[in-house]
Each structure stands twice: as C-alpha cells, then as structure tokens.
Image (tube, rainbow, N blue to C red; front, top):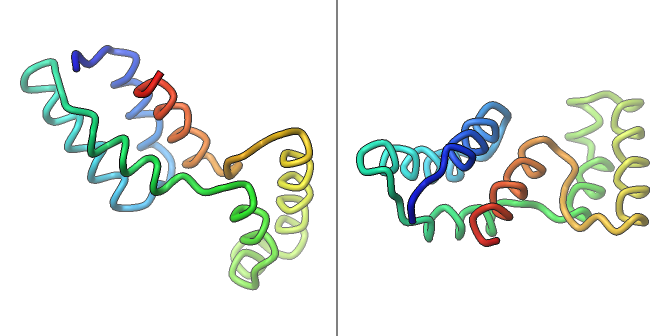
Length: 112
C-alpha cells in the first residue's frame, strides 16, 4: 500500500506513548519500509495491532490489580476503574490507555 503522511504521523504519535515491544517493532519495520519506497505491506502491523489492543474489560481488570494500585496509587487506580466502568457503559470496547487508544486509531486508518 502507498503510505500517506497521515499514517506515518499516526504511527509516530502511537510510538510517542508506551506500546508493547512487539508493536513498536512492527511499527518501526513498517516505517522503515515506507521510508525506502513510499510503500509498505501493512499485514504484519495490522496483525500486531489486533493482537495487542486490550479490551475495556482487560483495562477494568488491570485497574483492580495490586500491580496497578502499587504503580498508580490506590486513588488513581480507583479513578481509572470508574472511568473504565463509565466508558464500558457508554459502549467503549477497548482499553482507555493512550497506547491502546492510539493503536486503535491507527488500526482504523489501516483497515478502513
């Protein structure tokens, strides 16, 4: 596929926040291919995006974990939990973290 400036910008935006190492690698490989020829096969990147974007239920579960409470503090974890519950009630299907949000936006651009 011909790679637009908008896709490159969205990938760089996603890479500006935490995403898992596998997604970072797939995104960087896609960018490297696009830099060389102006085109890149999005298949591997799309597969990695689909694998790594967490569900809203995973986000809610994470907010209740000891890991989250230790990392963010009890109060912040509770606020995150409430935000997740509210988002799910309003129809959200994916995690609210910046990485998943930006990855989902990119996925939408790549698959239409």
